[in-house]
Length: 416
Ligand code: GTP
Ligand code: MG
Image (tube, rainbow, N blue to C red):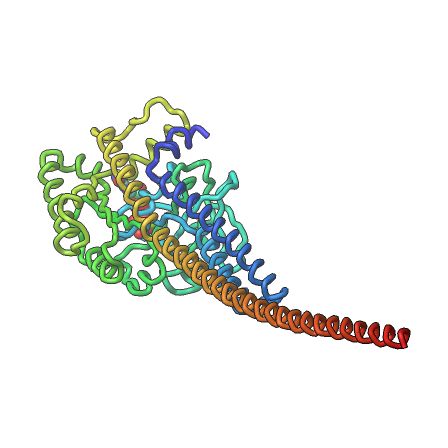
C-alpha cells in the first residue's frame, strides 16, 4: 500500500535484526528437534522398541523444545506508553501507526490497557474480551468502557488487531501497549506485574507545557526497582503548543526540560549514563505527525496546512525518535528474549550430548563384555577341540595297535 511504502522498509529498519534473529533461532531449534527425534529413535530401537530411560529423557527434551518454539512464535517486541491523562499517549501510538486507530481526545479517554498487534487480515478489528469474537474497530471505545465497568479496574487489557500491511512497524513484530493516565490512582504493582515485566521499551509521554509530575516519576521508580535498567524514552509532547504560546522562551524551556529529563533518567533512576540519556529525550507534536501522515496517505499536496511554524523540524524530531527507539527496541528484545532461548537451547543440546555420551559408554561397556564372553566361549571351544583331537588321536593309535596285533595273530595262526 502507499502507506506502507512511505515508511522505512524492512530492509532499512533496525527492527529487521529482530526478524532475522527470530528466523535464525527458529532454524536452530528446528535442527535441535531433528537431532532429538533421531536420538530418540536410536535409543528406542536399542531397547528393542521400548522407551527406556534414554527414550524418556529425549521425550522430555522434545517437549521443552516444543515449548520454546511456541513462545518464539508468540514473541513480539513490546513497547509500553505511560504518562498522565491527556498528555497524548494514544496520539503518539496513532502517529507510529500512521493512522487514527486508537481513540484520542480531551478528558480521560483511555480507561483500560490497549494492546495493538499486526494481523494478516486487510481490516482492523478488536477482540471482544471473554467471547474472543471480532468487533469493528469503531466499537473500541465502547468495549473499553464496558470492560472497565465490568472489571472495575484499569488493569484490563483489550486487544486491537491492525493490518500489518498498513504499518511497517507491525510487520516487524512490534506490539504497542497504550495505558490509562498514570494519575488515575492505579494499583501500580498490579500494572507493572501485568503489563511491564516483558516490555522491551517504555515511552514516557509527558506534557511539554509542564514539568514531569511525581505520579510519572514514582511509576518509573517502581518499574526500575522491578526491572534491571529498563529502556525509557521521554517524549515532551505538545511541543507545537509550547512553540506557539512562548516563542521567545522556547529555547530556555527546552533546555530546562532536557536537563530535568536527563537528570531523571541518569541520576534519579540511574538507568543510563547522561550522554545516552540525551538520545532518549525528544520534543515532538504527536498530533501534527498524525495529521501529516494522514495527509501523506491520502496523497494531499499541502501537508503543513494549518499547522504551526516549525512543523517540519518537529516531524524530523519525531522521525529521529522513531529511529533511535527502533534500534533500542530491536537490541533490547534480541537480548531479553533470545538470549534466554539461546541459553535454554544450549542446555538442551548439552543434556542431549551428555545423554548420548552416557548411552554410548554403556553400549561400549556392554560390547566389551560380550566380546570377552565370546572370547571365553571360543577358548572353551578350543579346549574342547584340543581334547577331542587327543581322544581321536589316541583311538587311532589304539585301533592301529589292535589292527597290528590282530594282523600278527592272523599271521601266527596261518603259519601254525
Ligand atoms: P488518556 O487516554 O485520557 O489518558 O489521554 P492520552 O494521553 O491518550 O491523550 P490523547 O492522545 O487522547 O490526547 C489528548 C488530547 O490532546 C487530544 O485532543 C489530542 O488531539 C491532543 N494532543 C495530543 N498530542 C498533541 C500534540 O502534540 N499537540 C497538540 N496540540 N495536541 C495534542
Ligand atoms: Mg489515551
